[in-house]
Length: 309
Image (cartoon, rainbow, N blue to C red; front, side, top):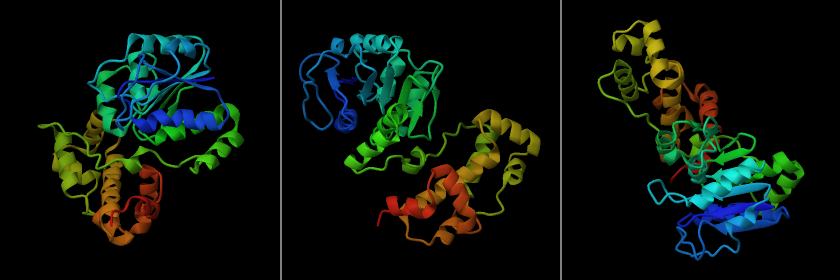
């Protein structure tokens, strides 16, 4: 049995995902509200779940499909108790999109990896510092805890659970019924709008990052040039950059160039080679492997999906 907990003010799409996926696979799905009575949704449609939270006891999987944005009323204590009880009893507990906030509020994500919608990753990390937040994924599987990125990524997470627990034939059959890919490549990066890092003022590493962002098309811009710009040795610059960002300066620079290319691919009709040169790569061949590593799909596929004419 699959249990689904619906919060007041939840997004309609996320609410519908789990019942549709697991219902199509033939599972009994019980939906319960965080409180009795009609619940509002972001679509302006009121829902009245047929079950109570107690009816979810014994469910093998309990799913929180989305939730209201951060800053709203906290989850009802009964919801948190239901999730803790389910997890303690061996159930898999799932937070789709903003549902990850509810799992974190229940204390189930402490010391674990988790994700949520990319717009709220910073809020998530700041509110729940004990959680290891993962940004560029569609979902995170921690065994008995699963979280997903925003909206449609809930489909990916639910299909993953079917594939993991019941085999690829079941997941593929449901995917065909829903006319979706059984397993999408890539992570959230292909859907993020201009993820430029927040840069503190008055710091050499921040100054180097600003300098780089203003000169990304320049093929002469490399890590040595960045270190020289802020009057640090290459070794000291590399060490301080890693301490500040968690990655190497070369990795960061390549990622920023890919993100520039990502923006140009979606907003211009320029040829791939032109986009590559405007982003600091010599040509499209040089851009392609880095773009695929960061975004998860080739430049041509990204443009086909996201170009705005």
